[in-house]
Image (cartoon, rainbow, N blue to C red; front, side):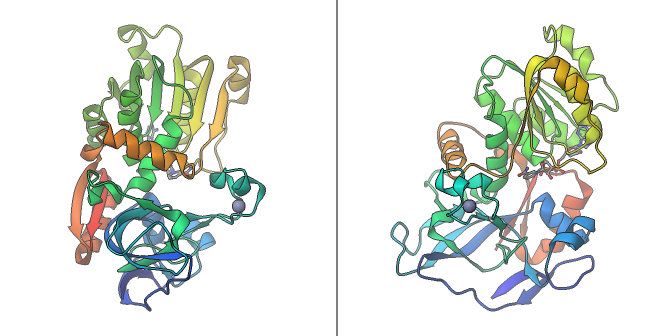
Amino acid sequence: MKALVKHSPKVGIWMEEVPNPKCGPADVKIQITHTAICGTDKHIFDWDEWAQKNLKLPLVVGHEFCGVVKEIGSQVTHYKEGDRVSGEGHLTCGNCRNCRAGKKHLCPETIGIGVHCDGAFAEYLVIPESNVWPLHNEIPSEIASFFDPLGNAVHTALTFNLTGEDVLICGAGPIGMMATAICKFSGARNIVISDVNDYRLNIAKDLGATRTVNPRKKNIKDLFSELNISQGFDVGLEMSGNSEAFNEMISLMYNGGSIALLGLLPESTKVNWNEIIFKGLNLKGIYGREMYDTWYKMTQMIRSGLSISKVLTHRFKIDDFEKAFEVIKDGNCGKVVLEW
Ligand code: NAD
Ligand code: ZN
């Protein structure tokens, strides 16, 4: 089959012929129809320090996907050939304390497809039945192809109660954009989102932000009086992975406020711990998606009117994958989807 493979320790990924993956008794083989590009794929493409440290080559990359069931193993009970599905790319052990407690997103043995083992940028993907997620007719495949990062946005945004609360989101990448729509849908009072990229802020505005701020041009605190925010934000969603943005968020929180941390901060990040202590802030790290409560919630929110389609800005045929990676590199984009 055709697949996008990282075969050499240098910049790039390459379309190659690789063996078709075998479907085990508890597995489902999916014929991929759409994939979406994640920041992780860019790190792999660029062969940066993180990729050099963490990957074993050769590797079929990609973990955001949607497709159609092609084959099922003998023990599979809930799917049949032709079903349209997406799926969770974190494979967990099923036996550890957290897995057995229904907290699979906290499994220390987690393996990520497209990172630790072959992934979804291929004609076929095989995953365990338990990782497959069924798709309702009203959910378009191109949207379902980025359920993985939508799940990151849902998991982060719904960690703390938003109803009537003033929310600050740092980072209007695809996940910050989608989080904006989720906060709006969930009844937040003010949703302020910051980014240094105005193209991305404009999409966040369209998705329901009360105000967008480019911190290079405007001070977030200047918005407090016009938005009637007296002391600070109640909920913070850190989705930039930028240490300055994170520290500014801490300084803009109301006492007793809560911050959900999704963005991956550089190792050099210094944090104003005493401000966190004196303000009595709650901080929670977010990893992946809750299996499978997040998947349930995002599905039902979309079926009840949550619209995130504006985040999808670019579509390419798979043979034009290099053009798609150029768009990602440029940064003036939301989600970039590849059609197989
Ligand atoms: P992204 O890189 O596309 O978005 C990050 C955004 O932050 C960019 O638009 C960038 O311009 C913006 N930014 C940079 N400096 C800023 C500043 N000073 N103030 C405000 N914004 C600033 O990433 P994404 O795909 O939207 O993901 C968001 C973050 O979540 C990334 O850090 C990613 O690595 C991380 N992530 C974590 C998990 C997890 O499980 N914890 C999963 C997926 C992604
Ligand atoms: Zn486990």
